[in-house]
Structure formats: structure tokens, C-alpha cells
Image (cartoon, rainbow, N blue to C red; front, side, top):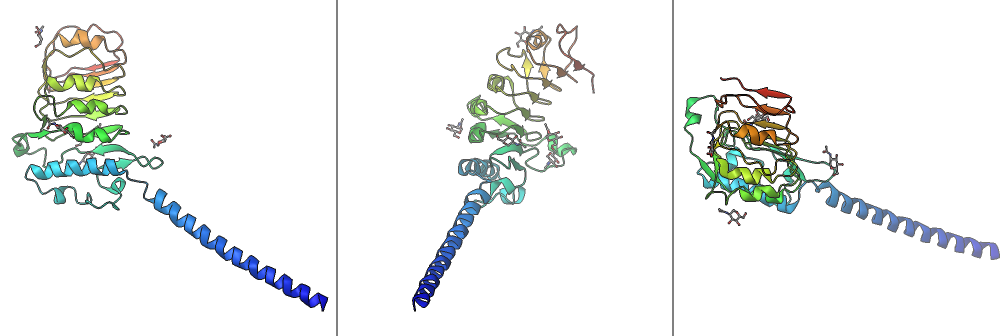
Length: 258
Ligand SMILES: *[C@@H]1O[C@H](CO)[C@@H](O)[C@H](O)[C@H]1NC(C)=O
Ligand SMILES: *[C@@H]1O[C@H](CO)[C@@H](O)[C@H](O)[C@H]1NC(C)=O
Ligand SMILES: *[C@@H]1O[C@H](CO)[C@@H](O)[C@H](O)[C@H]1NC(C)=O
Ligand SMILES: *[C@@H]1O[C@H](CO)[C@@H](O)[C@H](O)[C@H]1NC(C)=O
Ligand SMILES: *[C@@H]1O[C@H](CO)[C@@H](O)[C@H](O)[C@H]1NC(C)=O
């Protein structure tokens, strides 16, 4: 009798344990689902997604079919912007680290019609939310700042930016102070823009590589460049620069004409 009672109690307890195990399983499943929700979608921060959509809207505002040019950039909060074309994120942090917005219009840049393409007046402030951006390629876009520097000055908020390629745009010297304020900038490519005269000496403390090909700077820039502490590569092709270069520290100077 006593033994049976004990058995019943034991069986009750084991039933209770099974219930507990089931609850634990459910909880575990819940945690796993929650973890996937948080981390699986972690690829895209809302403010970064919105900044990218601002760029898409800008493309559309210039009369181009933005859905055709940037097809995966869809305005849907569940869309992971790290998976969009031209966008790269750090897989650990989920922040956008590289944007390849080169040749946004997808023109045949070798054809002569590209050379006559309209200037797009861009407000680069839209990128200021991309705080972890390391590489920004805006080459072959015929961009200029909207209203003097006002559309470009906020670019200096990109404190992590290391590589900026502005090849084949219409930026002039007005943008240079904002670029000088990019404290992490190591590579700056200004090939084929509308720069002229002198180069500012403020900022550019970490700049290692500078490409000034096809601009109209004059010889006065050589002394300002000599003051840049980290510069080791300077490309001056087709810049009509004459005379000797004062800085011993610069490792390679490419100064040939096309
Ligand atoms: C991603 O970010 C983490 C944390 O900031 C960093 O340690 C890591 O090097 C980054 N990965 C890449 C590929 O840059
Ligand atoms: C930017 O894109 C162009 C192609 O449009 C490429 O030639 C260039 O190497 C890229 N710049 C950087 C710094 O990767
Ligand atoms: C942009 O540049 C990358 C290399 O940096 C290249 O692979 C890609 O084709 C370019 N995109 C366009 C539209 O030219
Ligand atoms: C550029 O965009 C920012 C917001 O992103 C806005 O505050 C500013 O007025 C704009 N500047 C110009 C010149 O349109
Ligand atoms: C270079 O350009 C700057 C600014 O336009 C001007 O002040 C300077 O006199 C010029 N220097 C030479 C050597 O032409």
C-alpha cells in the first residue's frame, strides 16, 4: 500500500517534471525566435536605411527611374539594407561600412555622351547618418554640391571615412574644407573635378594617398601638400604642374601627362 502511494507520488512528480521540461522547451524556442528576430535582421539600422532611401529619392528627383537603377532598395522596414546592391555592412555590427555609388546613372562612361551628362546638385548631408561608413565611392556621377557648400559641409560628420573616391564629378574648391575635416581620411581621389588654384592646409592629417589628376591647381599647392604629415602617394597626372617638389617624405609622385 505504502509502496503504491509512493509510486503514485513519484509518477505525479515525473509528470510535473515533464510539464516543466515542456515549458522550458517552449521558452527556449521563444528565446531562439527572439534572438533570430533581433540578430538575424540586425543587418540594417533604421536611420541608415532611411538615409539610403533619401539617396534613391534624390536619383528619382533627377528624372531617372530609381527603381530600375537601385532595384533592391525597397521602402519596406523589413528589408535588410545590408543586402541591397552597392551596400556593404560589417557583419558583426550591422552598420553600413561601404557604399559603391559609382556611376549611379549606369552610363557607358567611355562613350562621348557621358561627358555631356547633366550636373546633379547633391546634398551630401543625407549620408551623415552612416556613422560607420569607411569607403564611399561617388565616382562618375557629375555631382556638384547644392548651393555652394551647404549641400556638402555635413560630409565632415563621417568620422570613420577612410576612402573617398570623387572621380569625375564637378566639385570645386568649396568642398575642400569639409574634406579636410574628415579625420580618418586616408585616400582621397579628386580625379577630374573643377578644383583650381591652391589647396587648403587645414586638416588632412591622416591623408596618405591623394589623386589630383585632371584639375587646375597651380604650383602653390606643392608647398601646402608638403605640410601634410601622412601623405606618401601623390598623383598629379594631367595637372600641368611644373617645378620641383619640396617634400622628401612623399614616396611616389606620379606626374605624367595623358
Ligand atoms: C566589424 O566591426 C567590429 C567591431 O567594431 C570590428 O572589430 C571588425 O574588425 C569589423 N569587421 C570588418 C570586416 O571590418
Ligand atoms: C570606384 O569605382 C570605380 C568604378 O566606377 C573604380 O574604378 C574605383 O576603383 C572605385 N574606387 C575605389 C576607391 O574603390
Ligand atoms: C562600381 O565600381 C565597382 C568597383 O569598385 C564595379 O565592380 C562596379 O561595376 C561599378 N558599378 C558601376 C555601375 O559602374
Ligand atoms: C541638405 O539636407 C539637410 C538634411 O539632410 C538639410 O537640413 C539642409 O537644409 C539641406 N541643404 C541644402 C542646401 O539643401
Ligand atoms: C595659385 O592660385 C591661388 C588661388 O587662386 C593664387 O592666390 C596664387 O597666386 C596662384 N599661384 C600661382 C603660383 O600661380
